[in-house]
Amino acid sequence: MSRPLAVVVLAAGLGTRTKVSVPKVLLPLCGRTLLATVLDTVAELRADRTVVVLHHGKERIEETLADRDGLAIVDQGEPRGTGHAVQVAMEALADFDGDVMIVYGDVPLMTADTLQALRDARGSAGASVLTAYPDDPTGLGRILRGSEGEMLGIREERDCSDAERTIDEINAGFYCYDAAGLRPLLAGLSDDNAQGELYLTDTVFALLDDGQAVVTVAADDPEDVTGINDLRQLSLATQIMRERILLEHLGNGVIIDDPASTYIDHGVTIGRDTRVLPCTVIHSGVVIGEHCEVGPFSHLRVGTKLENRAEVGNFVETKKAHIGEGTKAKHLTYLGDAVLGSDANIGCGTITANYDGKHKHQTTIGDGAFVGSGTVLVAPMTMGPGSSTGAGAIVTRGTSIGEGETYVGVPAKPLRARAATDGGDK
Ligand code: UD1
Ligand code: CA
Image (tube, rainbow, N blue to C red; front, side, top):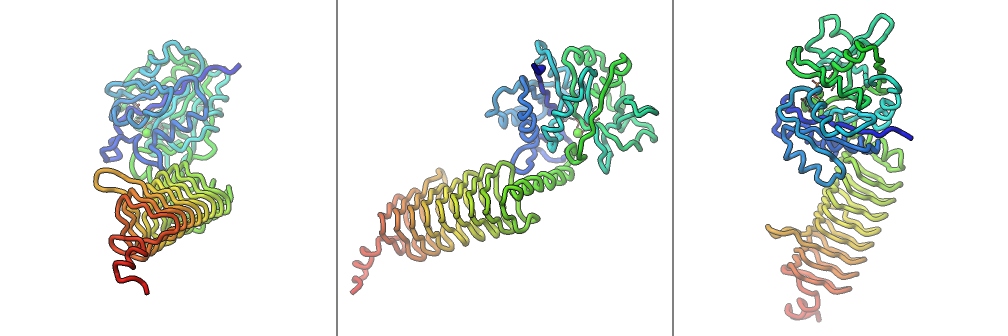
């Protein structure tokens, strides 16, 4: 039987170096916050307990976690260092026996495989520590090693001598301990260092002093351990995450003409043989079927679903839009809060006017409908199957266009009725 696992996520820090007002762990990374990204990775480990340590921005952060089950959220109080944060977390784990994994909420590119390897590596050692060799170790804790390569400890950059600062192996901020072994280590921490903080990393010195082993696991790819302390690092991490997402879709048989100008968030489903043309933005949760065409210059927002063979083209924006099989909206169109049947044709310049200033309303467009260029459909409204509108029609709210009917004009009227008032079509 495998040992129980608790994961502690540290996210109480202020993140002053980002210079923005949003709490650091709420910064966005390809459609998720940094913290959500870390928590999603952690969730793959199927931990028995997950504790999130918060303080600065706690209320705002907590709101974003409302729909996640099974998280214990603890308030660190004024943060006094990573060691202090884990002390507080362990109060919530007072009854816990098993492995405790510590992860930092500002290191979002970590993979579950690497975390699992870190856990597996500990064996009977007092701790396992994830390390890496990044191109630029500036600001990070350095791994100190003896002449035989044996682990001697972790030193924060600010506490390093000039010689130690040249060490290129760094502490990534991920550890695995035994719960019972960790508690006395935390109790023994001191703040006698350059920042006057309780450093979690000092537990490594204590374990080694005590004659216990500390094993290190080197991350396969230093990219995975990129910590986010400022917006420059966030933009680098975004590039890496974006590329990972694109590679996954390419691997699944999605044709992406120009990855450099294609922005696909985390959590987008795209069927094979679908082609995504340049300068396209697709947000989290969008679902696209097979043999679809998206772009160039399309913007697919939350709640968009494209059935197989649907096509959206340039300057088309969709939001909460279900677009039926084979339906095409190729140019200059907004489809919001809309349900479209199959094989409909949405003419250039169509707008679903879904918002009356207070509420959003639904537009329904039936199978085989033909929407003329420049039509405004003021929601709520319905177009029946096989119905159509003339170019430039403004269909007022509450209108229900019957099956096969044609509405034209401003405000739009059934073609026959209008023809009659105009003097009829002789
Ligand atoms: C830390 C490590 C450093 C490592 C680096 C990797 C320590 C002492 N140093 O440094 O060796 O190379 O991460 O990114 O651990 N946090 C709290 N409460 C606190 C302090 C921090 O929750 O009191 C959280 C922060 O919100 C953040 C994480 O812990 O998510 C790391 O804290 P940070 O201050 O960024 O540590 P670094 O100085 O980067
Ligand atoms: Ca950091």
